[in-house]
Length: 237
Image (tube, rainbow, N blue to C red; front, side, top):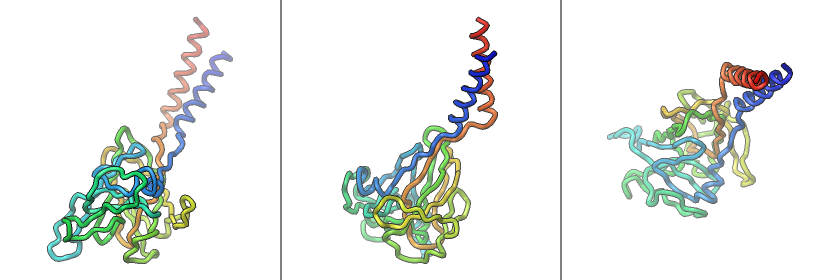
């Protein structure tokens, strides 16, 4: 009996630790300033998440032509992840700060590399291999702040609105740029989750924190029970 109780305790501890997986943080500012360089992607994959993007270059103007495909952009110089209409190079550009974000049609409708609310630029997140939890994102307007005020800053993430009141000062690294954290606890599945701004200064996503989806309480108890039964059978044998 003592052996089986010990096994149950171990199983419970193991199950609890499995259900409380630690989060991993991915710093887009560091990636853009280092190993990835200033770079653009039709799909950017990291931390079990695929990022894609769209924008509306004529939003709010006569002749509005609706959403168009865009590239996910890693902007160097203390910025991070943004959106660009068109790039002259797709893929990593290691250790480079050279701009590869161009006008969408080579000289007509312009697009910056931040996330611009007036252009209705949207990032879409989809889990690549099973659901994950988007614990937090960090945002900044360390450069390319073209319009809007901080107090009017509004993000819509997974259908929920976050304002400047939800931003927690939490600077990443020692670059001197200001970052703010938004705590989410949002499950990302294979159905796209959107991130976009509806008001405020043009901005970048500095980083994100991702963890595994925790096991439900019933799953923990099941693991514990199976561990106890296995130990009891071994003792009887």
